[in-house]
Length: 419
Image 1 (cartoon, rainbow, N blue to C red):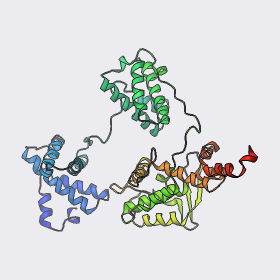
Image 2 (image 1 turned 90 degrees about the horizontal axis):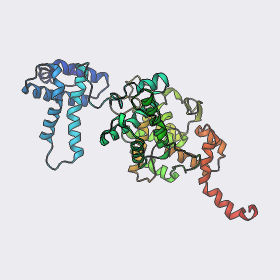
Image 3 (image 1 turned 90 degrees about the vertical axis):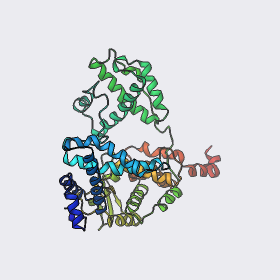
Image 4 (image 1 turned 60 degrees about the vertical axis):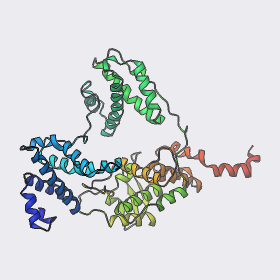
């Protein structure tokens, strides 16, 4: 196993003779299954050899005792490599490079071990343990909706902990203060969805007798009006500038550029891009199939030359030793398909680096820019709605509020006749 990554048999014998030698070999086998690079394997083996020496000096003789010494090992590594003037980012990098190999090895050799922070505990797991079972079994909510409930209730749990309030002592004033705090940073759409989750939770607490009164009615019902806001689009010049700034010499640059081109050219959602599979590209007929759209339908697009070339450049460097059929993979092991939130986060980061100023930058910004570009090209709204997969015509008509060029023509040419 180690001979695939080290040329010197003397080095291989030194690693296998360690107390943790058998565990290191098992970890290397796991890394190979995850398609880790030779450099990654060598780095992990060297770090685990240092960990072996560290725990032996502390008198460790049982594998089950290893997790108790990980934090001390990380602190020793930081003290050895980090000087007084090093930045926090460098310190965090050293800590991660020290901790990650050890914790991954422990996950392999100790079935009961779970990496700290990998799985967040459900909010109110002790005070209201049956709530998420109720959401899943009785209300039949999807996993994505359960994640939304978890995010909001985790914030609510943290607020109650700061205020030293237990569930039995909840009052409408506490709830109002929490919502006021959240409203300072969240959009009104997010507030409406969050208050709905909180209302369900409070009614469950009353049903189970955890609180004396039903506090669900104390959560205000916000209202979002259709077409009350403007789309957060950017100009097409900014889109072109964003694409021009992507360095396509790296594998990640090729991947990100292909994603950006698909988002901007077809107005796709992040979920739709994340779900794209290799079979969705019909290269013979130059077509792109989007099988799972938000409205429950599918769309087949003609594959543009720009988008096709961008995807081909990425496919030439995409991992071929993985079983996933999804097109876009992460650039680090285990090279899993990208999630929709990772795509949106990537777009937001790219926009920030390009100094593009827009509220709530993300993948949907490029979708808005695509629609706005079609509106400015005088494409009929019905065709635009079909092109980007809008389920309701009203979703497209909102862009009519920012069709400034049409209003300008009306005022300059025909306003007197109309009025």
